[in-house]
Length: 505
Image (tube, rainbow, N blue to C red; front, side, top):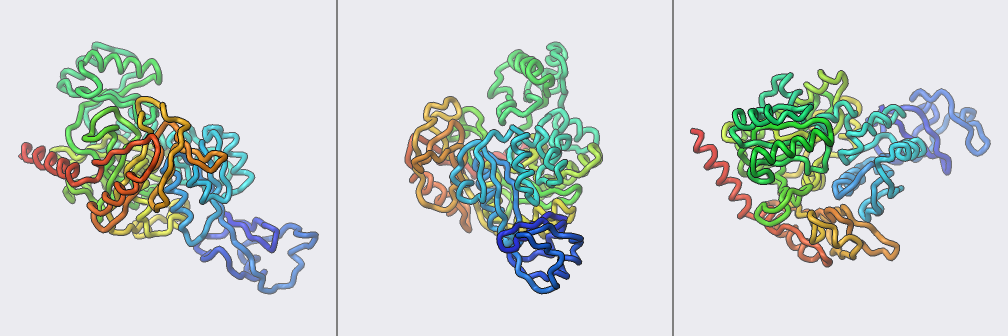
C-alpha cells in the first residue's frame, strides 16, 4: 500500500492509503463516492469549506506521487532519470552532497547537504511525506537510514541496517554463506585480535601464500589488498591486517581466487528476486588494468545480458547464489531484504565464487542497466515494497552498453584539479557525479569521479565507439580509460578464461 496526495485546485489533501495498482495516471477523475469507498472517513477543511458536505459529483483531482532520493555520484543521476521516466511522473525530492546538475534538472526539489546528517534527512522526509525513498550510497544504508525512514512510515528501496551487513561487514557475509551452506566462498578466517602466528599459519598453509586481506567495514572500495599486487610478502599482509583490526576491530583474510570478475545485480523483496543484465567493471585507474584501485573506471554489458567470457552455467550459478543469499538473510535477520542485491562474482576454473556483496546499485554498473530498463521503475519499486515482485516485471532492452568514467587527471592519487572548470558536450548518456554547478552556471570538478559517459547500441563495438566519442569531446583537466569496452580488452578476458579452464580438464 502506498501514500498519495490529491490536489483540489490549490489544496493538497492527504487521503489515506491506496494501492498503486488503482492509480494509472498522474491526473484522473474520481467521484466523492469513490473517495469514500477508498476508506477516506473524513477530509480536512479546505478554503473554509467542509469537503465532507459536498454532494456526490465527479471532481477532477491531481494525484501527485513524491519519491525521496538520497544519492551521491553519477549513480544517483541515473536512478533519478529512471524514476522520472515512469508513467507515474513522480515529483523527485533529491538530496546529495553537491549541487549535481543532473539532479537539479530532474528534481522537483533538490538539497545539497550532508546526507549522513540523518536528522536533517528525516526532517525533509517528514515535510515532504514521500510515497517511498530510494537510498543510493553505501554509507547511509549501512548507517541505518532505511530503519529511520521506515519508522516514520516511509518505505525504502534499501535494506535495513542489520541486512546491510551483507556489504558493511566482510566477516558477516562470509559467515552467513558458511552457516547456510552457500558453497561459493574461498577459504577464510576472521580475526578480532592481532594474532600474527595464527595469521601466518593460515596464509602459508591454507592459502599457499596467495591471499587477500579485507578491512571489515566500509572503506570506499579501497579496503581490500591482494598479495602480489598490493602486498608483497606475508609480513606485509599481516601488518595490514593488524592495521585493520586497530581501525575497525576485525579483519578477514582469505585465499586469493584466480579468474575473471563480473557483477550481477538483482531487485529483491524477501525471497522474490528479479535479475538485471550481467556487467563487468574495471577497477584499476589506468589503461591495461594498471595502477591503483578506484571506485570503478568503467563498465560494459552485452545485448544477451551475459558476458563473452561466461558460460551459461556461470550466469545461472550467480543468479542462484543471489537467491540463496536473499533467503539466508531473511532467515538470519528475521525480516525481508528489500532493495538491490549486488553480487560481485568471479568466474574461476571450476565454476563461480563470490568476491563480495553490496547492498545497493553498483557504480558504474547502474549506469549500464538503468538506461536500458524497459519496465517502469516506479512500478518495480512498489512491487518490492508490497512483496509482489515478479521477474517478468524487470524487462531490459537487448542492447549493449559501455560506460567510461571521466575523472580529474590526478584521480585517484591526488585532487589537484578540484575547483577547475569542465565542459561537457550536449549529448545524451552523460551522468554527472562529483561535479558542482556554480553560481555562474559552470560545472566545476570535485576530487572524485566526475561523470559516467554511456554509449548504447545494438553491438558492443558500436556502444564503445559512442562512449569514446562523447568522452573525447569533454574539455578540461580530465582523463578516462579508452580501453574499456574495446574488442582487445574483451578478447583478453575470453582467452584468459579459456586457458584457465583448459588447464583444469
